[in-house]
Image (cartoon, rainbow, N blue to C red; front, side):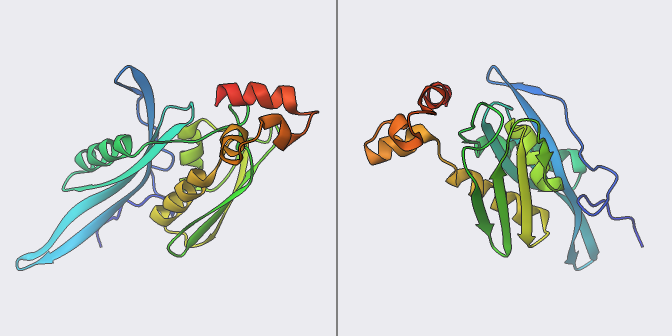
Length: 198
């Protein structure tokens, strides 16, 4: 039986980090999350191709993911990277290192819980989610995947959770209040600094 290169289960490419590329003047870090060999049964037999899942981020609050399929691995990775660059989202971060609040993300049978942490905690998360946080630039977070262990579902559920994350400034604007009204007087100066950086 032919060897099947697979990420996530213990493949040889685990945590593969590609070179930083300049894209429109900004440095982007792209991480290969998963690569899988897929087969299409045709009249003459099987036609093999490779499916890649890539996460791209600037490590400053922007991140995206993409999937690509091709007959060769490098081409599949290139397609996935291009798609990831087109689907980047901005995530508000607290002090540039963690989330402002805990969030839950869902996609299909996959659910993830993302928790804000104190400084020095590090990234406590499984493979596919760790790649997203490293590309995003988060340094302190605890994440738990519940349900599906499929890398695609885990990454999409993580992005669903990140899309739900909000900053104090955006919540204050939505409610027509000041940031200090939401967080209290004691945290007001710190909240103001955070609001300016988001």
